[in-house]
Length: 116
Image (cartoon, rainbow, N blue to C red):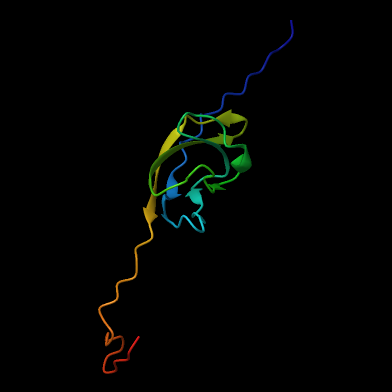
């Protein structure tokens, strides 16, 4: 009779989000990469469709953000041929605030004022 050996591996831990916010500028939408604390990561959108442009990377720049607001992504880690469960990542894209000018003689240094 042949001997059969099995190797049991533990399911990897869920990846933890490190960066989950960015500022959003509609004229130049450069968003911060979502970073997680694990190695080979597989990314998904809110409907759990794969984000192939981020496959296998620990960070992902979301591609479907068109305005400021809250967005949901999912990530799972692959380790030793096994996948973790999906981890939910809440991502916040904040609007870039408008500059606030107080008037023609705005004070901008400790003891100096200039006209704008």
